[in-house]
Length: 144
Image (cartoon, rainbow, N blue to C red; front, side):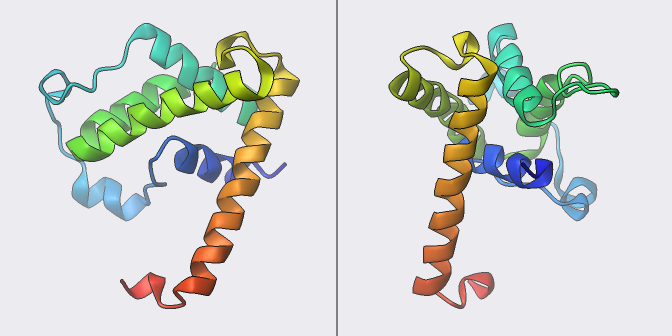
């Protein structure tokens, strides 16, 4: 499985977008996440760490969990996303967990690594199919 593709898939699954370096330099601004109603709990951070670890597991180098990707994601969402997009991200986290429950009968956090990978792979295939069909419907979507 291509890690770069999976990272994009997680972004799609959680309702977010992959942010480019140019956006980092020009668009990030601190926001009061509490006022926006989009704070992350320790459980949310642990959830994001586990999703990321499924995509970038520990090998001879540190995995996503050791790199604290969950904390990084919360900073990016709180500092760089508009309030509406923050809410979409949080809703996407819930939907990811609900989908795992539907597929495997338990939450993502209780899932075996194989179930986690199966879920994310399934979502990746769905996202690719969606993008493929979207391009067929609207060939100028890049210019909208």
